[in-house]
Length: 345
Image (tube, rainbow, N blue to C red; front, side, top):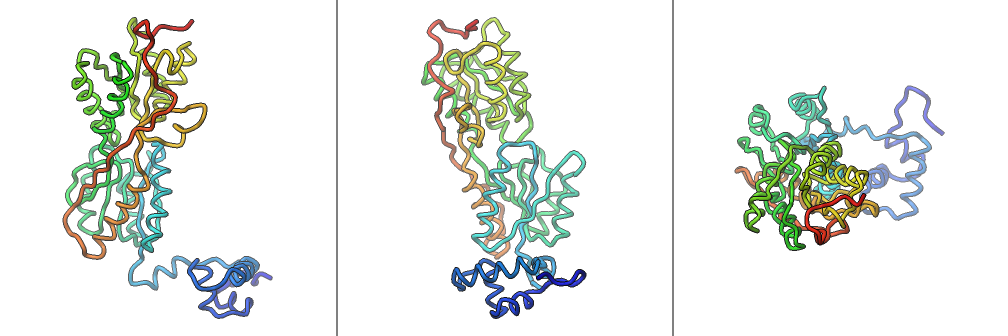
């Protein structure tokens, strides 16, 4: 039976109704070891019947430390949800909680940072910011540890955890050149995280394979729409490429969809490589060859960087660079025997 309206059910109420100690209830509701499975089920059932909800705000106020990590993320990058999910696991491993705050056109970085600090977050993790770091982040880093995931903006005092995107683009071009492709284009990611390094890696790999004359970089971003726009432009060219390295997986998906609607077959006429190895890449009807970013390791290292700073183990900034891998699937193959891409009609 639920408590009367207006009175908040306490942990002591749950203990009394369940016939166990308050410590046992605390262990069960905190998902800590100790109580057996039967006791856990009994306590959880009683808590649900009474409508018990933990007063997290009160718990935080009673602590000397909040052990909360504030996470700023965007809603426009396919990789962000993967990183956020991994951060929850990584934070729990070191007994930290996670507080999320989204960056939107109506919500500036400054506002989201202020909100998270107001919620007593001890450190900040930033995902998916533009290349140029907001000027005030260096000041924020003087107050709390700040870690960027996916790029290094170079702001003073900020740690970073990222993939070697230059090497990732080289892996993609090496794969395509190894299949026999020469006309390899790149759809750029603009000012988004990792885009500049991917662009540089693409150009360097093309030069290394003696394909400097075939370099083509189209403006884009990390959306399906940008891939579709690039596809319409490239495939209308009298000498379209036989292979494309897209800025990320969503861009690649937009490119592939537009190419298929235009009568081009992937990979028979056109090979496409994405970047990130997001969930969309592994879908059976997408089956996209892509450069894999290890989001679990990125999250682990980001949380570790926060903990090192908070525990006084390190005071100097760190830049942790991860080695990418190529996930080869069904969107790449040898180029058409006739040479440049031709419509299948």
